[in-house]
Image 1 (tube, rainbow, N blue to C red):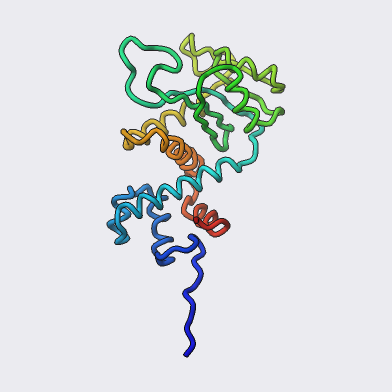
Image 2: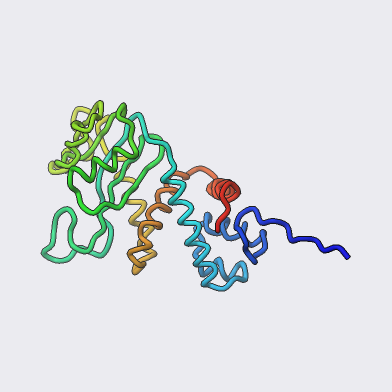
Length: 233
């Protein structure tokens, strides 16, 4: 008597879940359905859905790292995420907040990285890994971004936030509206995850970046292609 082997799953290695369910979870994830609701809709337990959602976010982070360097016109700015401002504690890097350095290519993708500080060396290291030296950089007018010229950036323009500017007067092309739009999107989205463990913040931030980059496109097709090329472990 011959026995047929179960068909190989294209999306997850050595999984006891059916391929149908493993396609359904990314679909619900891309539709921004919570893990709790996804568990109910697919008949999975909550811990399984949470674990799979975490694996999808980890894959998104890997895909973001593999992106090619940006060229053309690129903006740079830093944002602060976390608890409400502590009374009496002000300024960049206020206590209890995570510092994120953002780089959007105008008309293209955004890249966001958690950084330990707003020192010139730190911002330059982020830019070196994600931006071509032939790019035109627009950044807010704080000192760390001055290092972009020393790094070798062809053009670097500053916008003076100290003067409540988001666009330079007389030069409407010099602005950081793109990254400001991403900060608003990410902060509004992450409100739902208040109380998340600090170690999970990076994955949620990368997810925000992908969703922002995929606006107007089919994120589900993108995720299925990623999983077919490199199935989850």
